[in-house]
Length: 492
Ligand code: ADP
Image 1: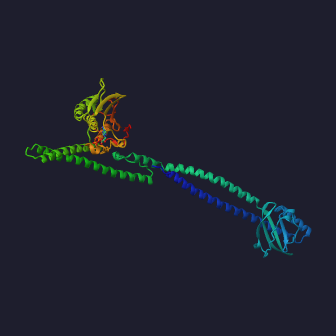
Image 2 (image 1 turned 90 degrees about the vertical axis):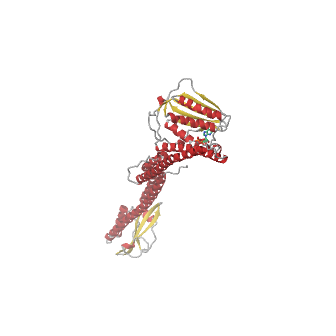
Image 3 (image 1 turned 120 degrees about the vertical axis):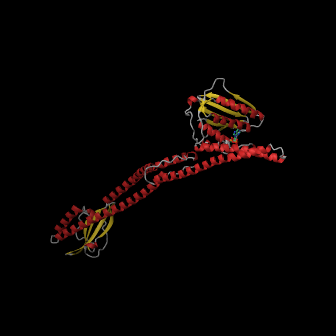
């Protein structure tokens, strides 16, 4: 499954985008606000300068022209660096320029209407490569209307705005990176319980439905999600238990009528008055009911294994003895089917294993029975038992039809039958599922190696008594589902 982008990274992208948009809007708003405030301040400075110029002009009305010019120049130099002029309404200078700069300055040519303070006009001008704000004010003096022009450089404002913009260009990405890292880290922390819940949910299957997801005590959506999942698991657990109980009960209940049918058919077979067709039908009934009995018995065993009511008594068991016992019966079966049959046991006595005698015998029988079934005569069946590294290794080898690589991973599943065997060979598909369950209860490994048209080897590795942690004389519960363990390998 292709892993999509995690919630954490998506949240980080969303959060960072919103944060970036917010920062950008804030920066732009701040920039305009700063520009407006600086312009206002500059304008107010010019207004105050014009007010004071009017005062100077008013106070010097009675002075001689020279004295008036002198005071005007002194005021101009002291305040605006000499950048002011007093014009008459025909734009001729009412007073000489107070400085060279004032004389050369590109004063605007506007004609002002009105004679009060409201008629202040602002313009911008460029002089000697610098920007200036220019205030023009009309004033009605005792000698007639005058136009006062005052200028101040805007350079300070522009420098401040440039510094602000550069600051924003550095701080916005830095803040963005910081917030993205912080946001990602926080969302990872917040979503950590989701990973734990996912891992726990993944480990739950139909065989361990009684397990529950961890519930974070966070009193939030995650807590509610885990609680809801746990409630769902409880319902599933109950439903599956019901199905298992039903399977066990049905298998159990069907056993008696089936054996009655079989007994009746066997009795009918012995009836000397029965005609040929009836005898064939009765023989068929005996055969089918025998097969169905075996199937029911296998289903019952697996159902008990699932609900933990299969009773096994663990005790020290001699596996070599089991091999000999099974071999005695298997030899008849194998040789009766046209195969050669061998067993190989080491000369030295082997250590015991901890297990349930009859169940282990059943495990070996399932494998030998399959070996006979899936080998075309004349073939060879070989049982080998060895000790290796604290384990007993029991192998059932055949020279049979082999298992297709596509079938191999599935053969331990319940009711799974290989493609070629399902039509040609009698069976239910439960034998290896039972074998795997028996192996699991004995802490043994059951694996299969097969080569098509050459043969199959089933291998059981079971710990010796010394190396087993299985307690003696215990009642087992069901173990993990047989088809969950990837132990089959295939040679091609
Ligand atoms: P059944 O034998 O009743 O079909 P099993 O669970 O015993 O069911 O086996 C499952 C499948 O594994 C069989 O249908 C068959 O395809 C394959 N199989 C098992 N043992 C052998 C073997 N020794 N050789 C070839 N195929 C085998």
